[in-house]
Image (cartoon, rainbow, N blue to C red; front, side, top):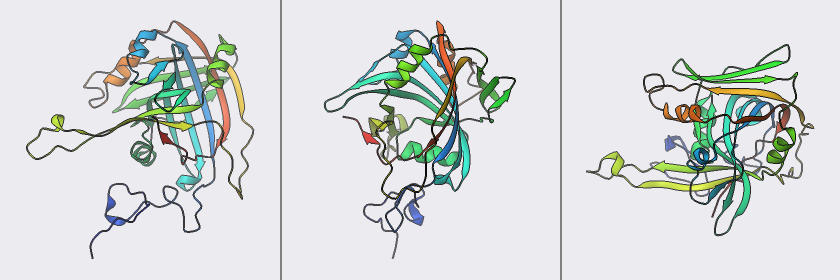
Length: 289
């Protein structure tokens, strides 16, 4: 008997070995949530040219504020990954989605760099997150200065710096932007394989639609054995710099940091250094309409 696909099961390529294990599919007892992640996040926000951000927005989205947010986050001891850790850099803008059914405000993820393949694959295929690989060392901290960076093929395209000894330039504005967010927005897009005789660029599209992952209203299920720690956030000052690569530097993704490097920094809004626990529950994600 050959391969058969079980109903109501999540599969990922390669599919030949059966459905994905938990937490992508529930365990036999129906549980799906594992130990939450311990997260350290270094975030910098700056005001930039609104038209350059609006040029990136898909249909249904509008720019809420002309602000780019860059956050380097270390997800540590994640239950979903058997206690292992990885680092991501989330690049997003405050946006509003207004569709036929859904109307909400959140953060549209333009790119999410991560330094391990497994969360990238699952995040792209199952959740529609705009994930891409980068080499991201752990955050460094000395004398109140926190430093982060990212590179690809040996080319460093991002430097991030927090100064914990200084206050944010506009802490009230930064808090308002953060507090008004209801979800993380993404746009799932998967190119179809071409039909026989077609060129790859002539093929149709398998998936093209926006998705939302709510960031508020999460409640622990009955019997949840973990305690989420009270978040600790220190508002501070910070800077971020994108370095524009060429096609020789980052052959398959150079245009992403090249565009970000062209964004003018009109003024810094502020920064923050935060520690919190994240339940890493992605079962509430849904397609926007």
